[in-house]
Amino acid sequence: MTSAKTAKRLTRILSMLPYVIANPGVSVDDLSERFGYRRKELIDDLNLVFLTGLPGYGPGDLIDASVEDDEVYVDTADYFARPLRLTPPEALALLASGMALTSAGQGPPALESAISKLSSVVAPEAEGGLVVDLKEPEFVGLLRSAVEGNRVVSLTYTALGSGQTTERSVEPWSVFSANGNWYLSAFCRTADAERVFRVDRIRAAAATDEGFVAPAEAPPPEVRYTPGEEDVRTVIGLGPAAHWVAAYYPVEDLGDGKIRFSSSDPAVAARLLLRLGDDAKLVEGDEVAGLLADYRQRIRARYAGD
Image (cartoon, rainbow, N blue to C red; front, side, top):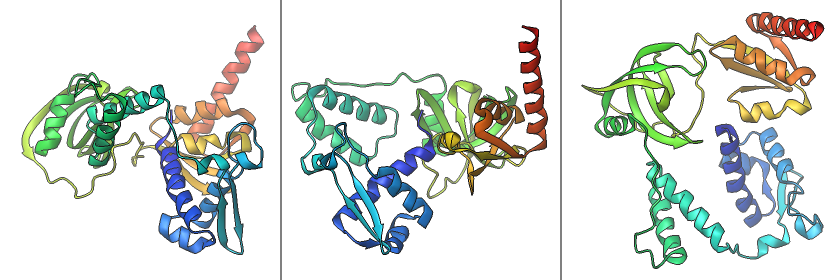
């Protein structure tokens, strides 16, 4: 699964690289302002693409990225000089993916235009007969209608982490599909904050007659975790082998290899630390420390018994 943080980073890299290639010697300050970088983030991303390439790994197969006197240069690999040519199976897979997005209600006009052009090349004889339709679970239609009509919805929802079932009143912003599941992005009046709900965890839903004013720019439809005031916050120090945690989970980067990890249940952080072993260290979090010590003791007792 690709996290929202990783997808956002990749999108920024793919936006930044063509600009640097077209403007060799662009300043670090210019790039930082244009693409919303901090200096360290920019250097990290350039280091990520440095010497990236295809098997063979000769000089002509790799990307060279460097900063000289605060000027950024990127020399592309030789294969970038040739236009991309898709095989028929690759083109069909790309077309099906785009059509799946539009079927899920996430297709912007630019994507619909691209699908139309690609379809005319891949399957010109189909004449509208090529269809990709995602099966919609219960409540998706109701929620989508509430989004379009700006109607408040009453939910009975079982949280994935805690297993607790609550009654909620929400202002729905968007309904979307990601990672094989359907989600509702909304303002939760009960929590007084933005929330993303998994549709298959909704036990009951009913649109009310009450309207609401939707925000001019609602957050993008993506799976993300929004910490609440009641959540447990833990500071964790990550070793080199555990840096993937910062990209996989929605955490706050505190610098120097430390992150602030938020969860509704301290057991989530404790189990993560147990999994990471010596590659991570608990810096702050009394509740998590108690659970982690208990988990370790139980594991030692089990092995001692065996």
